[in-house]
Length: 293
Image 1 (tube, rainbow, N blue to C red):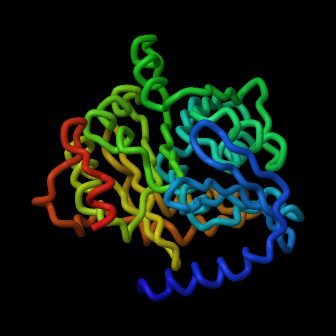
Image 2 (tube, rainbow, N blue to C red):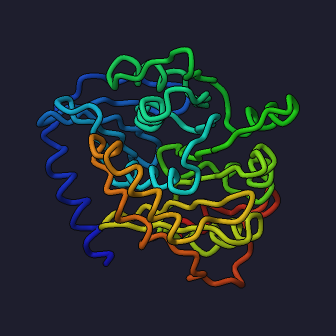
């Protein structure tokens, strides 16, 4: 299926080259660009490798989730259907916290974003707003989690969606980090992470999650290369529970373009990786080398 990923990227790139740049700013971490074309406004992070990650939204239908990975991330509501406290590492354009705040208006949502310019751009161009229930913390995600541990703060749901314009920051991929996240969860808490199925790190990432959580759901859907990993601090729900919850969420998620009823059959606990792969740790995390092999 990889030829589909290449075709999708080429098509997206051709369309996006016609975009009108409406904002460009250099932050401490990256060049941040906002472009617009055919009612689609996109946030891009340009780094030294000149690779970009984009968050986009449709200016005509702001609720609609443009990228498949964002829609896939809503599958976490099948595992944790009513979280009262949510931590999101990585803001981007704010798609996830905005949607979760609308869907779960009483939930407390903490968003951690290392780049203050990203926060400003999300507010100015992507309809992101803080309120009584959404708070943004401008700092490194792992530092925030260590401080939260010290303060005995816990969450029903933790979402990992941090990227540095190239891939997930290395210190947010290790066994020790995932153990710190696990310790932040309430007894029935859930973690969801946005990763990639075509990464050279696939085996190592998978084995790292297995080392910390044992069994977890892996969701791959459509033609995107994104893979959503979902783990619980306790046992995972059954397939029937997933389907029942999908039916309950279907109407509420329709305005966001989320095909929630399609996800239960795609969520698998099958161990499809090389289980002899070495887990990533703070002492062994050669992510850059592995990714570029």
